[in-house]
Amino acid sequence: MRIFIDTANLKEIKEAADMGLLDGVTTNPSLVAKEGHKNFRDMLEKICAIVDGDISAEVVSTDCEGILKEGRELAKIHKNIVIKVPLIKEGLKAVKAFSDEGIKTNVTLCFSPSQALLAAKAGAYLVSPFVGRLDDISLNGMDLISQIRQIYDNYGYTTQILVASIRHPMHFVDSCMIGADVCTMPFKVIEQLAKHPLTDIGLDKFLADWKKLNS
Ligand code: G3P
Image (cartoon, rainbow, N blue to C red; front, side, top):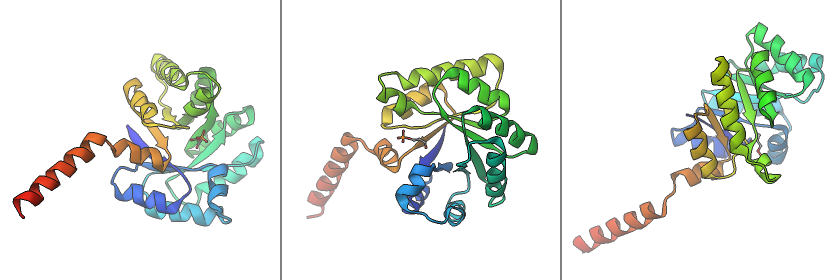
């Protein structure tokens, strides 16, 4: 299981990287806007300097030509840049062209198994199904991950399943059980993965006993 952080906050990226668990970073236009990064290129360069792994940079064009123009420029920034493309018809055309050119893609905003199949056929390197947003509308996001895993295995597609829109640790654990390839999470969820109340209680007790011995 590869772990990515889903943020454009450089401090959080640095802290997660220092924990020794980070394999990549995903951003999206909303996350970049939240952090107020006016210079997208500069932000990506800084992220690439912190993390040696896949760094997803999302395009904002919605026509194939525009997506290709943006993506080719972004891909020049660093060898680790993966072009994040929306799962729409024009996006799939661009994914096919990027794949032929050797540019890696992360096909985002995936909400159905048929969309995921098309992304794989187009040659996507990663596909990003959004589990939390499906849960938000009373569907089961994790069911989608199981379906995509089964379909990719049935036909031998090598596109990696990147579980996105993760909201809590059980999304991560379920993704591991299903055999997804990557999970991208906000920093808060990464912190939650490391936490256990019995660890804290146990540590407090060890330290209190040690103090008694030495007093
Ligand atoms: O980066 C895409 C995805 O992870 C967004 O998550 O929480 O806005 O649905 P969320």
